Image (cartoon, each protein chain N blue to C red):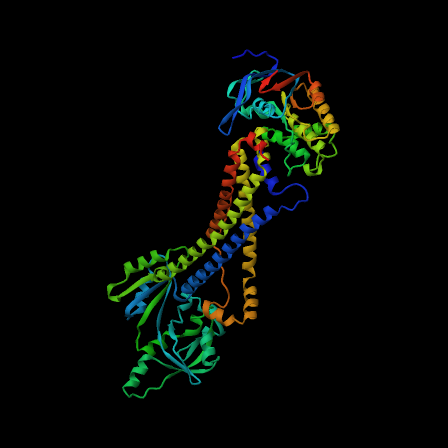
Length: 411
Length: 221
């Protein structure tokens, strides 16, 4: 090992029983910054990942939407399914309806799904917590969990549905009875908004309620793994007949503003929290500068023994690097440990403060999600080590500039 | 340029050095010439401020001379030759506090870029020669002043230099310890055939060298 690396390690971790306070405190400073970055970026990544997953799981990767409605969905599905990269399609119709149970009204979004094909595109079965998707028929409904609680409906309860078409007819003094549906299941996706404002019925029920005939509002498309949703959407648009008056959009394109905001928030958090590492690096600089002053005569000695100024500089730069490396490793370990226990810690915190419901309502998730992208971790590691190494540059420059004779003469 | 004899380890000719003190320039060394042969010991005495340490710095190549020339074994003195050619002993020991006695001695070899089993054995041998075989793992803070200076002696001899420059090595030691250190230094240099330039205030120590010289008002006599 070159002498300057050896000496750097010895100065950071001196021989003997002395506890290396400077090293431990410096490493701790960087570690705290790295841990905070890991936690924040992972939680932000988790939010983004959950939202992306939820969009894909509830809409498919590509959605073909009509400007009015699609008259002959089967014909259009046949065209779309021939497009390279398309695995399956399922038609849907959706709209707001009034739901009433036990004199408690609600106005959820009603999704009409094609029971024969929906599971090829959307993993709906996975989200049904009570009852079963197999029990859904034209006289039943699956409620979202929070909505079921809000209107007091249970499995087997009867709910009355008033569609806009029905309400329109009632305005003309026609006597119309609401559609009575039995609760065949209760689903929970894990997103507060979806879990409190969506109900699922069969496509035929939705077509009846909205007077669509055989028409649908759109077609959800599942694409093959590894395919780019934007490219598949472009291919679909190229084959869509003009008469269909429809357009295919990938989930990325359809939610680009939202995804941009998510990415922006993540970048801002990264930018702001990086300052913690920069502040820690300043304290490393300050400590190393003090070390240069304190060790002036030793630096002079190294020159007298034949040490080159650039090697003296490397000795201090390497100390910054080691602090950065140690701080990064410790920070990653601390960050991932805290991430692992995040939900336990939040549960204890919210129980102590009584804010569990507020948290769920505000953040839309019942559990704090976390997703750590390898690229984000690589960026954190590189930033932390580079910043810490740069922290050693100024002390290194000061040390390298010392004249051995003057350094040895210093008091 | 002065012609150098083949067995000369150190050949300094017409060295000069001045410092700016306020607006006045102080001439510290004037036309200093000194030849030291292999294995020879030379002592330089002088009053405080006579330029002894400045001369040692010039001879070690740590400071640049304003005039004259300096040759080590017939070759121009250069910083990259210093680690292998010159061993320096300072008044204040200058041991690295984070390193134990053995590591301090080995530091001279590390800086030279030669560290291995042979160097480790040599360092242990030198520490044994200076009577510190039981203190090799002790930190400088755990050693007495005399022991620290003996570690510094071993470090100065680690790279088997042809020339040892000692700048008042007993200045921080009591008389008894100082005498022991000088005996050790002279003995080691004699045994290893190393030339020695010893700067000292002590007349008795100076007298033990082959050639005692005096530095007075910047002139070597």
